[in-house]
Image (tube, rainbow, N blue to C red; front, side, top):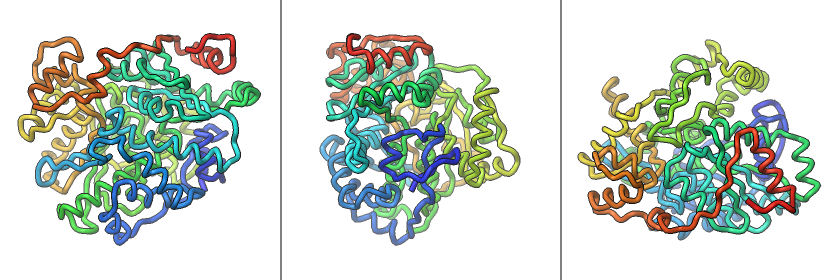
Length: 498
């Protein structure tokens, strides 16, 4: 069963996946996390990635059968991933590895959950006897939007609406979304940053009057953002898979600790790692990697979460976030699962833009996680150095994490085996990566061609095709107009579809 971070709960996993967000505004979390023994973890070594994911999810999704999850993971992680290997582990040197999560159809780690979520959702509809059309509503900082559009494209009984910050994503990320096909897909640019976009989507989800209007039309909202438990649970699996791969390579022995370094803005990816650790995976240090929008890094250092600060546009735009939605789930754990405390912190954030953990919860946080941040120049230097030293080209988000790992090792001398989570293909951020090599091209596609020549790689076909694909989605709205835009799209049959 799942419960809400704000006190409600008692719902099945399939019901939580359908709802996305709890009626009290909280996020769904397991009533109790399952436990994996070292023997359970060793058993993963002989399995394929879909089978590993099936094993992990069977402990996190209570009303899905093992057989149902097997069908879902086989369908999600089949031929849509490069070399049929969704989460390969690349060794850069003896004690440093990249968990490459960008080999799916949209070249970003969001595919790891969003190729699976439509299958989980389709089963959830049947389990709960729902016949309404499911409207998947998404706020994206760049990668979730395309991954959701791709995952739900022309899936019967669904419609997918994506809001993205108009000037807050890379050129490739933007083109991936606005050229998206499908009769049930809609993309709307928001004249603001990601926090404006995410706040608008949350406001829509908690508007009961709008929900009733949708119900009258036979429609119901759900989410493909990481606030949806169906997005979070599949992410736990790739941390177990990475550890199993380290065992297979004999880089570690069962029970040996491993550090994971995770670039994150909305806190979902590193939360999945924290859940994996609480489930028994031998993770030692969790390093939370931020860019100049360092609200999470400062929070870990001080115990104070404060969004009253400048917002920076960086070369790692998917992390340009100040309001980290998934942090609420971690607050629930830090507080000893005290929903009243979580409600108080969230209310303080709403009223004042800040809250303070207090000594005990902050001590719990410092004992579980390390935080740090990296500026653009350091990221660029790391991209260049990773290529010159290891012939590995990484994207700016991965560069933030890799920089912090090197900094941590220099400061501590701790050379424990470490996995850097690589979240996107460098070709999604061609202009930024080209800057690291002092390339003069201004056009993103020219940058990608130069990078491909330099590296001897081919440009991923998903990126190369964007240059000539027609734009299908041109709608733009102000943050305060998001509700009206969605209302026109879903409730006004005379309005031309966006």
